[in-house]
Length: 207
Image (cartoon, rainbow, N blue to C red; front, side, top):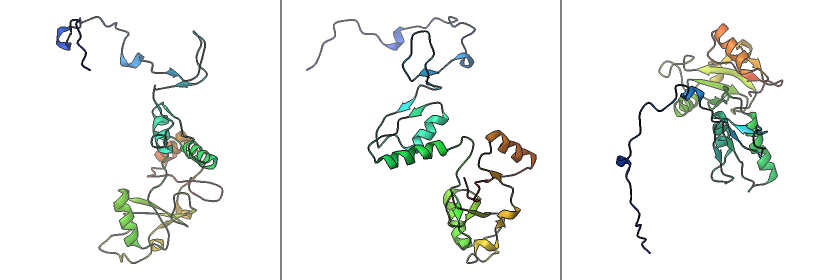
């Protein structure tokens, strides 16, 4: 049913903001977006705070590990849904906790026995020019070497040849342990003029 509003209606054009009313100490640099997430007493800081007032709902179609990582990188928080087995919930939490800001998980991975043609297709699909060569072709496999677009030429080399014949073996690659911090990794990248620095665990697997 339609409702008649008897009061006077206004439009935005009827309002004028007075200039020079903002204090000089009010600037983007002084804005604090910290938001309490847990209950706390007035005048006290909350035990858990967010650096940005954003969270995601506890819904299967909303809160994925990928979204949790993205929100965390921007100061927010994601509530992973519980409409799944406990094992899957724990795996999702591990995936989020395993992420280290500033580090990337390789999405361009091949096996040593893969052909250069297959490697070229993977590089075109991901848009990356460096591929990790692991024993099983996964992002967490044992690192055997690296191969880049500079290691082979699509017109000069036989694309049926194996990746192993063109890769740089891990013995000749600079790498670092899995517990390397971001500042330590950045220092090595700058000091040694490296394009990338693989992080390996005690078994030689990519992290």
